[in-house]
Amino acid sequence: MRPHNKKHPHLERLLQKAMPVTLDNSSRVLILSDLHMGNGGRRDEFRRNAELVRAMLGSYYLEEQYSLVLNGDVEELFKFPLESIAQEWGDFYDLFLQFKEHGFFWKTYGNHDSSLIEETEYRLGSSLVEALKFQYGDETIFLFHGHQASELLWETYPIVSRSVVFFLRYIAKPFGIRNFSSAYNSRRKFAIEKSIYEFSNQAKLVSIIGHTHRPLFESLSKVDFLNYRIEELCRAYPEADLEQRTVIKQKIGSLKSELDACYKQGKKIGLRSGLYNTITIPSIFNSGCAIGKRGITALEIEGRKIRLVYWYNGKQSRRFISDRDNRPQELGSTGFFRIVLNEDSLDYVFSRLHLLA
Ligand SMILES: [Mn+2]
Image (cartoon, rainbow, N blue to C red; front, top):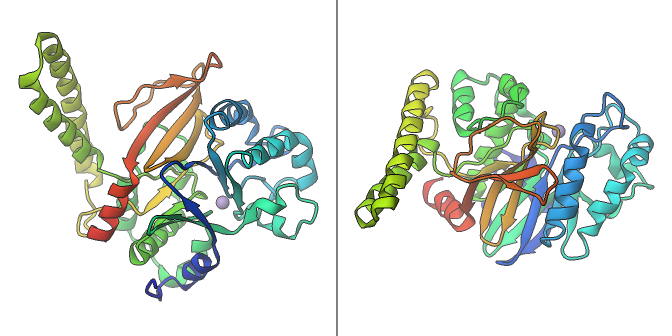
């Protein structure tokens, strides 16, 4: 039995009533959030990426037999009535439901679509829950939209200090994608992330949220990763032939200049905030959102791996930096690309959680 979490009783209650789903080593799950579907008009933020979402779900994740979790704010009910959304994007409902054929489809509700629980005519009603808990061996991955953490938030954090802002800015490496500036400016969102981070560490579980529109994926810090890669390459160098040595030299050169840039930036923002004994725990992940100006971020779980991926239209998107040295792959000849921004083994994630939190 998990110790009762006194500091975050509302999250503890949410965890208790979350729908359990068992994952195994062959499970594949795509987690996508914050689609904010509207009526197809100018104020509809989903419209821009609709064809990209259709292609990635229909021609990639369905083909690869993934299950699907839409983690809240799928419909934008603050601005549009459900009828107009269903009329414009009804074919997406068919697409979502197809994921039940080879796996599961669940939809958690967020603050923008929570009224759907009262809707009797809603087509995705049988898949709608407030929260999910993936049972992964003895471990738990807790999925919910994230707005629940703002309940009573200002009693817990009356003043969100500057150090919290620095801390979360450090956790949320910006990946070279610029479209979550609103999250950066909002202390309220930082506070939500921080309270979920604390809850996850205390409950020894991993939380996956959306809501703030800001992708979170903490494994090794970028600095640690770059150091580790350089170390690996130095060790490979003596064994390498002449041609390989040239490649290794080039790689080390570019890693080193990236590292220098990190240290230079670090002086400005503080490489570590010191809030958590200088160690960050990978206990909170955020899929980001599907309404980015340049593309879509999502989380993939494949067996014992978790990944943050970025999908974009190759014609529109400028160059950007991946934290890991992965190359983008085109989906057929659609002009849509997928790149892995970050990847880690879940065993490693849970080891860090148990050993360091
Ligand atoms: Mn939301």
